[in-house]
Length: 344
Image (tube, rainbow, N blue to C red):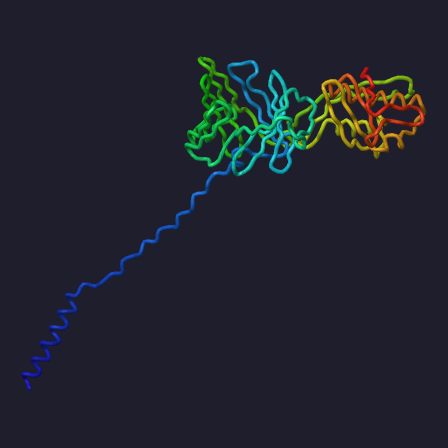
């Protein structure tokens, strides 16, 4: 009996000893790595924003014609018409923006009359890439004898408008180098043209929504209209601001309907117009004649008002007045379809 009791105590002691020496297992914490977000490739449109009423002002260095201002004149679908103004001339440029890149597809120099060229088929087809996808270092393309390359995606650029992180694009030809710097949400921040030892720069100093900033483009117009006594033609200047989408011809049409001038009836529409180097052809709706409400003297003054107001503001020597695509014919006057009325 004693032997059995002793053996039982030994077994208990061994079990206790084993439990005492056994190392407790601790749970190893599982490290959960956060999911890596997929890299989002930059979009072309981020670096060439197309927004109504946007403008950019540049400080020029190295040339009297450097710098200037760019305004957003017209937008339709993927195309935007910008007006570039400097000390030399005003140039309308149409860009097409897509996932593939930004292409310059049309230019019109000496464009002072806010004509919408977006619906006009250019005589000469042009496709010059301004910026090309994919937006990564090493992307290259060729325009004429110039090879363009994206050299940096995070170039720090300091200009009067502030500091920007830019995509740097460099165009090299045999004789010159052009550097362009585009910032996200802003567009072209800086441009450098290097020819030998000469360097010309455009540096962004101001940009934004012209309507919100009170900085819409403006033009001084000359308005001709009959005197209250209907004995002569009066003339006055007025300054008009233009939003994106507003054409000069439509603005003049609206002004000539105002009570002060009463040159056009309230329902008259300008159906179309075409400007050449010498003349301006205006095609009005039939209300031009049906809403005249004038004797021969008053009608003559109204016709002179139309010819001189449109002619002077469009910089032409003559104006052709059409009605529904035909010549002008009322009870007092008749002009052929192609008859030119001289601007006085």
